[in-house]
Length: 242
Image (cartoon, rainbow, N blue to C red; front, side, top):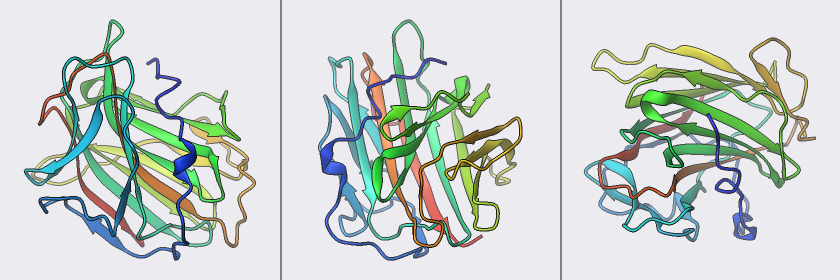
């Protein structure tokens, strides 16, 4: 699946003031009427992309007429998981828009090197069309085959499990049902460049194994597509020890 090469670029505003502590357990169900600005930093929008917290979800919206690049992202300020600890991130994503013929729209997330915003991994959720992920290294798009899952569901969940022993992020996906999650392996990502295996993607971010941390951003983008309330959303975010 072709991924927009522009929409994931982070602006200079991505460097936040102040320092975050290491992992603080976070759960977010977006039930409040407004975004918690002590927990999340909302970046200036690009084009007409915006987040709206309502009906117990974080909705991604684009008013008509759309532009060719409508984008919004927000960063978790309350916690930054580290290279030196075990952690697990889960979030639910909903996307009923069909991409094709120059039209794309997706919710997703970014995991970035806290010391260098040019080092980042992105994940897009295209609903029934599956999942697409890739990475940047020093601001350059990685050449390795991205993590993908062809064939999906309009509503799913993505899990990222990080091991301080292996220094690997393991990605899994699941449909969201009343019975809970049934995880399907997608692949692994090695931010220190030392991963192996057919489903592993490597990038040498030169991140310190004893002090390096990751910034987490939730994203929404659309290319030439208006997005109405309820078509794209993010819900039930958690960042916890495994």
